[in-house]
Length: 451
Image (tube, rainbow, N blue to C red; front, side):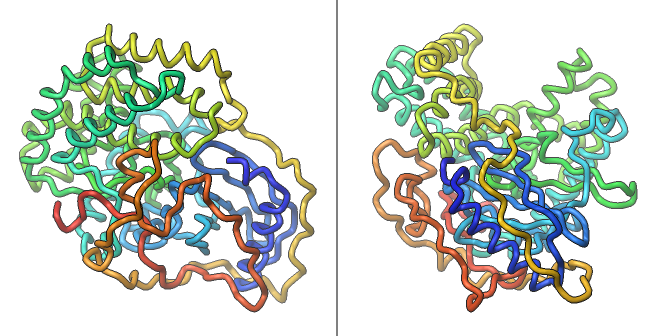
């Protein structure tokens, strides 16, 4: 996102961080350093007298992530880091550094750590499901099984209606081929909808970069990156991860060591059904998980720059084809057309998550404070509105938006209409992790409808 590369945006961020640190009595002892820059978010390190902190800014389509994380973290049993402060309207979070990413240390990808990640992921899913009354307060983005077929039909219509030269366009021939898998999708949705497992808030995929391993084995594994999270079936979270494990170990899910890892995730859910019955849900859950990931990516792409759309087109087309259970030949056709349009437009890779150092002149660090206190999270109060109060009709969405974007709250505007962020003032102190307003997106399927 271009606003993340401007010096004015950087100055506003530094001002907000300085005021947050002042509220905690902490001194910033060095300039901010950008570690990632992608379509969905940018992350910076903040050196302080109490250790390194992380600042994250999310893209406009995912601006709800800041409020969502602050709201659900208290009910996660320690599996979601509680931010020190959030700025809801901007999608900003300031969080402590409390773990090592699985993606950043290959040694953490061993069998024992992987089994532990799956076990703790299941514990988190059940913790959020058991706290539905609190977690769902204010509404949640949803992708429940019985809605997936409808979403895919709408998504396919969106792709087909785009101009032929658009990188996300699907030709009439490919659209007809993809529709042939709708029967398989409906059967999978029926199986998951009829299962005894309650829905929960899950991230769409158990990606290594979204898993933090603490230094202490007794501390819980933590899960970050909730911008693409949806209220959905809990088994959709691990489908892609299981598939990747089978590829790595060249075995089936029923073979070791994958079976042991999968069993670690299934074990807590045996209170709802026998493990053999739970295992039968993994395949349909994998199929439907592609739809959730497609929706989350399309939310970003239709508000992105053309070169970024072209760069991500093969991935989003692959997700669409996989979600519709397309045979290999159809998948190759759809992805091939997207790849050709990508080459015509260029890759746009400079904003595809590549680590880059910040180019703007650094803003001076905040002045030294009195004796620095340990930065401890302030307890969060529940959101002020219920899902029922959030049932308002969104404004008419502009052309070329996904169904998910057309369900957003009136407060959330497309990227092209996003006003520049306002610089906070000293008379308007930043909110630390206290009471949060409700989520700024409304869901097609409310949490209480699936609970």
